[in-house]
Amino acid sequence: MYKILIIEDDLAIARNLMHFLETEGYSVTHASGQNDGLNAFENNTYDCILLDLSLSDGSGFAVCSAVKAVSDVPVIFLTASTDENCTVAGFELGADDYINKPFRPRELLARMKNVMRRINRSPSALVCGNVSVDQARGVVTKNGNEIFLSALEYRLLLVFFSNKDKLMSRDRLAEELWSVSGEYVSDNTLNVYMKRLREKIEDDPQHPKIILTIRGLGYKAVDR
Image (cartoon, rainbow, N blue to C red; front, side, top):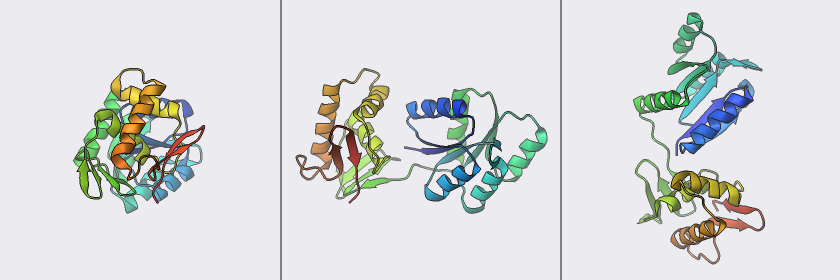
């Protein structure tokens, strides 16, 4: 799963963009300003950054400069400005693309894929306990041996491994499976997929160590 950082101080734009990208299978983090954006970048690894030019507490130019000084992660400016000088300045700082607002989500997605392909970035492996997910190949291994998951089991595992140590509600998990299957996922269906997934990844499914049940709240993947 590709990880995207959105640095945007317009909350309506950020929410809509996050929802769109998450339904497309991306893991998305939102930061509302320069300081929060740089802090998120310094403490996590991302495959692409969508960066607003004008931020309430600073400048997208400053963020781009700081990012490109230490990383080759693609940066795409999102801006309402049509000033040619701004565009040129962004590219001179190392920006990989420049998209004017309002933009069409599908076009943005295509251009994101293009810059990530050009830089040849692939989603990093996800590891939790003795289970590893090679996202580039879609292969899951346990103790180095491949295990086979259905499409929905694989999606469920990605959600957990991309959100390690975070509480995942049953509603959130059902929504994730629903977006992939295209059909409503009932509470009983979720129980079935959780049981099947645990049978494949846990040493003792009755006493799970990787995906824990948080009674009354949901589940959490932990890396012990």
